[in-house]
Image 1 (spheres, rainbow, N blue to C red):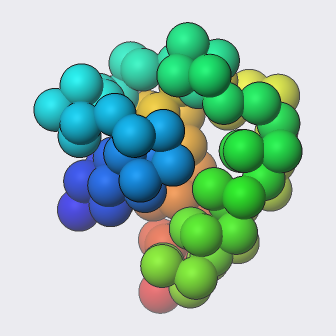
Image 2 (image 1 turned 30 degrees about the vertical axis):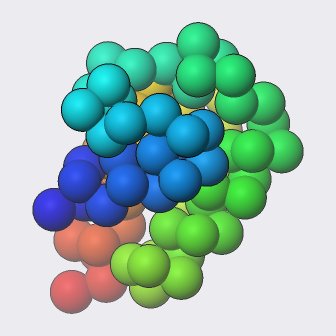
Length: 76
């Protein structure tokens, strides 16, 4: 669920098809910079109701999925 929603958000941001985005997709390779990532994190906060801090270790989609899932688990 988390991966699918993030893929959907990235697709809207980059214009890429969701089928082209996977867990190993790197944000830099998608042309996203730190401002784009910050905007994505705001969208995640709205979509999932959790806050994820920007971090240099978030470089791939899976990195972000893990952070969101951890934040969701803490929320319970």
